[in-house]
Length: 496
Image 1 (cartoon, rainbow, N blue to C red):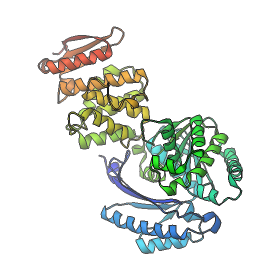
Image 2 (image 1 turned 45 degrees about the vertical axis):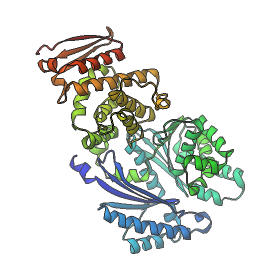
Image 3 (image 1 turned 90 degrees about the vertical axis):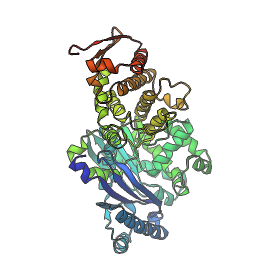
Image 4 (image 1 turned 60 degrees about the horizontal axis):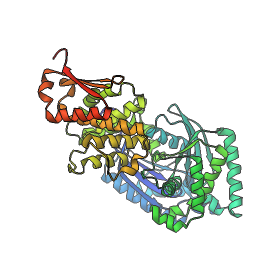
């Protein structure tokens, strides 16, 4: 790990929001951080703010208790730096400065109160941490505010902060029609500044994530990972109707949502319905990254930001969990002739797969194939959509197992089309062959040649490779050829 990554190897962030207070400690390669520690308390600090102008008294007590605990935990984990930010509730409450002083006095933590523009910028940077090529509009929902920011080409553009939020809508008199009119009027003004239409909308915030989880429940979606979950506006509207006609208690139990969070969901639904009507997004994506990740992104030099988060995460996993760290790159170079015509995105999935190919070797052999699939599809990986997760997972499954038929994982395979299913199988069987062909460097034993028009898979063996190409290697090479529907051609390398 270079000095820039080491400097950010353990960073703590506390986000004091209107609804929750959360502490996250990031650890590992800074470009693709692991969540070393993550704790959230639903304090409701901003509940009733629109009516009273002050922080919720009970929420204030709970928030202070949480911050005392977090300060002790940070010291115990030797976290440095420790950043504490507060958003709408603390910045707007009349007793916000008093709360800030009390926290400093009681815990030693200094709260940085950020304005709406800064909140929008940091949330957008969080999205860019996980998806550097993200382009569209970020919408971050809190308890008492909602921020929007334009992103594209790795930069944050126009930002708008609104005083929309579930806690505020709770206090609005006049029922659903009054709330709808109010939300619509605010968003109409936002649209004059943002001018968004037919763009991708990235949702950040707990209430949005609950709605997305309910969309999964309604659709019987097989992969329960919210980050990079993608929805069509039509699907979301169907889900909003379904939520409105359902018993929220049953929905809460089915999805494991807290009662405090579920209480705000109906108001968030009203906001999302109007967002779709006014902004007309072409697609709606969920980002699990937001302000906290944006603060980490803020610390990164440009050189670190430019790295691919998926490849960085795969390298870190290989470094800590593989038997031979560094072998993944050699394996990638060995099998790359099979993917000579692949685009850049497919190649990065191939490379990530090779880096991860040996990271579950400690699992029991009977379960290794499915264990590696589970690990990658549920891992904290940035820069990876759901089909990409399944593609890598399936390739790793085939790294250890010839056939996928009869697997309990079959419902997940439907996230891939037939072409991707076939390419994942080819990749897996190529890794299965290459990984055991030569343990030091497969290139020292031979070179693959793929002639797709002739459907011929070639292997040019070196002198060393002749001895290494034993019965098991021959069987795995033959299995790769079957996956490619190709004939084989084996010969000696020119210098062999």
